Amino acid sequence: MIVLGFESSCDETSLAVVGPDGRILANLIASQVDLHARYGGVVPEVASRRHVEALGPMLDEVLAVAGVGWSDLGGIAATRGPGLAGALLVGLMAGKAVAFAHGLPFVGVHHLAAHVWANVAAHPDTPLPFLCLLVSGGHTTLVRVSGPSAMVELGRTQDDAAGEAYDKVGRLLGLGYPGGPRVDRLAREGNPSAFALPRARMDHPLDFSFSGLKTAVRRTVERWELADGPLPVADICASFQEAVVEVLVARTIEAAEAEGLEHVAIAGGVAANRALRARMAEACASRGLVFACPPLDLCTDNAAMVAALGRAWLLEGRRDDFGIAPRTRWPLAEILPLP
Image (cartoon, rainbow, N blue to C red; front, side, top):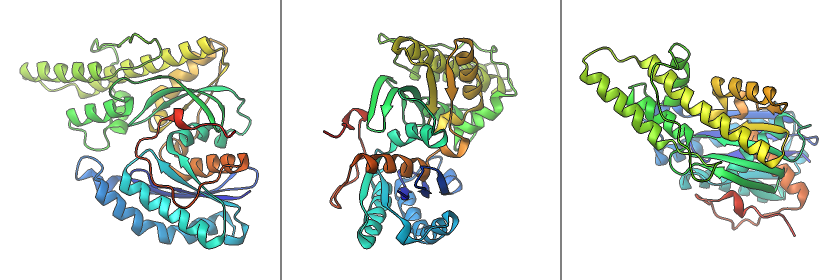
């Protein structure tokens, strides 16, 4: 089954095609980073309008890149949620319109589950079950993955997501938008031991918390400014990143060992962080665990992951009618296996 996927949950417009063997044939992404940088963050109405402008021209292009025609398609998948309501609506409506026009089965895909399934899209031999750390601007979650419709949340952040903390620290340090990648780049130039920043331990051993860390960075900056000296931005970035990565890796290893899982993966925008990828690989290797992660273009929002999970869902027999609406909030626990 060849599937065309639509992704528009936030500020990336993306279309992709996966082939009958699940291989990615095309994955086009139109980023809006430069557009939103002037506002210091994503403006939902602006994002929605840009999705409308971008989708039409991208449709013909993605089929051409994939080397397929409309008659070759076997199904359509579009992100249904979670995400920004207006942005979701654009891609979801476009996907339903294409499916209706060509008489194709349609399925609305869970955005976070698609991020997790990007590991399978990138590495088809990934064994089931496996453990995945889903870490992004809005989510930090540990997931046991037993199949495309069988994902169980083992732990989650109780406040800020890791990516959200990165962006807020970047803004605090005057690094602009998006802050996360800029913090990561500067961290390579700094001393990760320069500042003693907290690592939160929650009552539930697999949960996360990053709000206290963010506050500690703010207080460090305030104290340094009172001393009237140049702010050691690189050292602060390195110390902050060291705290985040240490906690993410430690919780993931704990979860894998508690669940008896030998295969560990990461997913989401923060999975593109070089320090996290390197440290997770080292920690897994030292404990005899197998580690894998998607390529960088499958970590940030993209339609290839949507098409890949959509294909898996369609092959399971899932179908959605054309009356489904976007879901801005959609817990992973509400993805129920088919009877």
